Length: 101
Image (cartoon, rainbow, N blue to C red; front, side):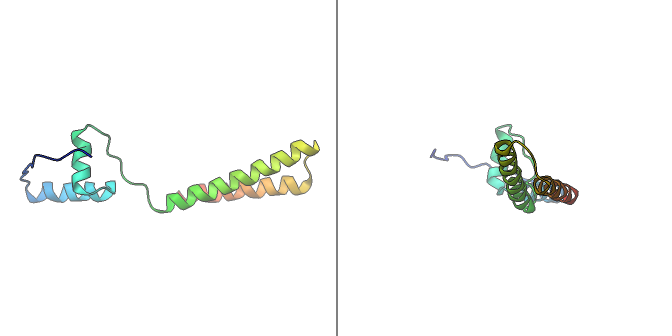
């Protein structure tokens, strides 16, 4: 880890300070990390809402189920009504998740 040798004093008025605090809160970083990112010309994006991780997990599980159905269908050479119903249900769940976004 590199050694931090220099301190920087930055004076802000109240509006600038409030704006900085809002941007730092949105980023999910602490103030030092946020300012270092800006200095390094990194694009500082807002942190995704916490529920996105759960949504990604749900979508991955649905994708795995669809892949298992596809493998079974390819092995048999035909799709049963149960397979079609399962894929239709997966599609409905995906749309439900998309509507929450």
